Image 1 (cartoon, helix red, strand yellow):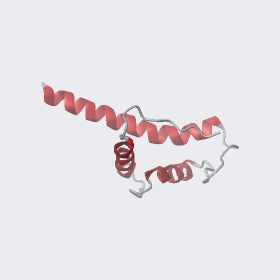
Image 2 (cartoon, helix red, strand yellow):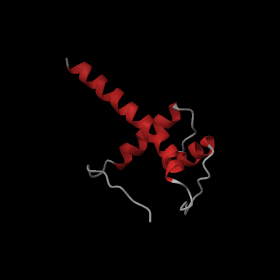
Image 3 (cartoon, one colour):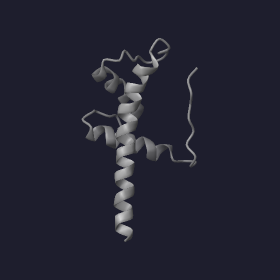
Length: 91
């Protein structure tokens, strides 16, 4: 059963998709701006995780975590950098 997480801020989906696309582009991945979620397949391939479109119920939690961690970790680092930059401009 796939989980679909909802963002707390209505309408923020496009901004988050843009952030993901930009961050992963800087990480060296080719990202289609119309389909930024597809980057997870490229990341999975680089990590040797057999991720496929559709049902991936046979993947282990560790394998899925490797893919999500690579993408999410990069996004978190960028959000922290942006927050630090904004805070430094306020002083």
